[in-house]
Amino acid sequence: MLYSVLDLAPVPEGSDTATAISNSRNLAIAAEEMGYHRYWLAEHHNMPGIASAATSVLIGHIADATRRMRIGAGGVMLPNHAPLAIAEQFGTLATIHPGRIDLGLGRAPGGDMAVARALRRGLEADRFPDDVVELIDYLGDARPGAPVSAHPGQGTHVPVWILGSSLYGAQLAAHLGLPYAFASHFAPDALEQAVDIYRRQFQPSAQLNRPYFMLAVNVFAADTDAEGAYLRTTMQQAFARLRTGKPSKLPTPVDDIEAAIGPEMTRAVNQALHVSAVGSEASVRTQLRAMCDTYQPDEMIITGQIHDHAARVKSFGIAAKVLAEIKQAA
Image (cartoon, rainbow, N blue to C red; front, top):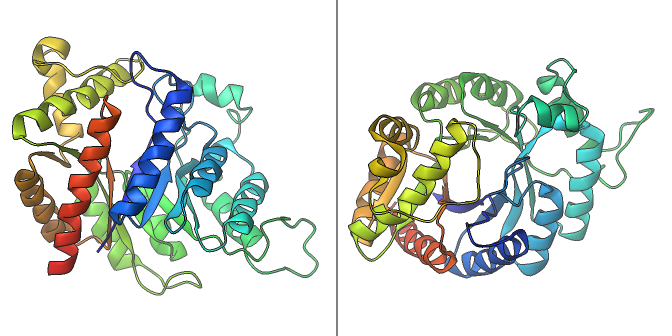
């Protein structure tokens, strides 16, 4: 089982975007030394606590700072973009960094309708499956007689993934024969059913001959269980603010999460974030092993919205140590 990093380039309270981008670069360099296989960044818009809106630009910045890890999008929200433009962007990245670029595609807008209108994509019908196929064609071999080709892009064969949090993405990934990453770190309700559908319905393709499933997991690892739980309160608060339409910079952790967001919201947030490993190295090991046994992922992608950058790097370090042990045991 491979293990990787999902980074939203978080902007903590008291900090700024420039520092967030610098911190992501620093984390990527550390993650490569820790043994992580790939480093993905995600597209979000109109959110003051996330600095990865221009995802392809930030991917290039991270790829320049690293040497071996695969770098990619987890993901690009394709409804916001013309497939040709994404093919050209990722074809350029793959030309500069051959064999290291991934392209994960999501169907969500990465923002609300105001964002969709600002991106000039709000009035179009849902063309996601057709757009995915069109994009793959642009990245494939030359098509004689094609009226439009991607330059750069054509012939780069950048690996395309389908991202999802529902059965729709599982069915599409299976139908197209593409690897599938499930957003279990914030929307786990359909996880088991989606993975089952993907694996049962998978049809081999030119890119992939068997199902390949990635599980997304939050990790808040620290020296003690209490410290891990304390670090987690940052993400709990951030998720509560997002659910109430008040996205913000990444909040500072608190001692009492129920006092901060209320008991009812705490229960709702904990349900949404329950695919998480929290606490000391021993606790995180137990929790991650249980997830591996339950879901049998081909790859696990780790994320964790932690306010303090040093604590975030340490958490990923503990997770890498544990996952390396699990991989060796398997």
